[in-house]
Image (tube, rainbow, N blue to C red; front, side, top):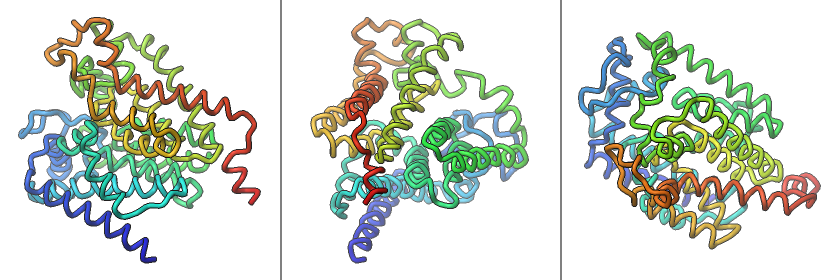
Length: 379
């Protein structure tokens, strides 16, 4: 009990420190857009017909996301920034606790504080904070449902996460493959509910599904170096966004292969690694995976640390060094990259592919050895 209290104190300390920093800084561009979406719902004006007046950025998330941001729109900017940063940092700390406990490893308060304090050295985490993004919050929600799918209401958080950002729907496929079809159904129904609620609550919501969703440039230049998906890599190599058929022909099989490996690890009892590999499939297959989407680098590093220290160090180094920004980038300069610049310019993508390949080789070598899940059932 005292240990649990110390962990809770560590998480709260992380959140409070983040709240102070966030409130002092206060100007997070994506948070402005979130609040603009919430204000659109409150004022009952079409949020997709104009851009956020503060940043000039468009609202690119589904209508339900705007509804979820209504509380932020009701707060002063500094308070919204503080609470949002606190929630993000608290979710990161919570993910550290979840990952360590699921692997039956000791979780000390000092470790939670150390990881929370050190994680901004990883470019995706730093970008998530500096933009005021939602990825750390969604990551914990997804982890909870993937690691504990037997709970009565498991799947609801995943469905809500998909209602906010769509790409988490990949995890529904993973749940089906590992035999948790009821959880997958709950996630699907939860997602469907977010679509219906968004259509009712937000004026002009249908335009997102008919126009915005199919516009590949709605979230920014797809060739930008920060887009570390297969579609981004293909765009940089081809000099233009790839045809949909080509993108599906490349991204589809790769993502399905990683999902299959994720399911194999999940069934052997490593649910965290399974969830992390599912996230890699999501990031690889998405048309746009900005670098701040790659906050899953943190739980992956924790998982690797328990298996191969050198792999964990190498993995972490990639996200600290941010090699995709070494070549010239921005203003369409990605189209002029030389062949070797495409190598480190797609570092996050290649790291994910290496992780998936390594996990596939490792699970194949394990063959018919008893899984951790089977050991638990027999003991």
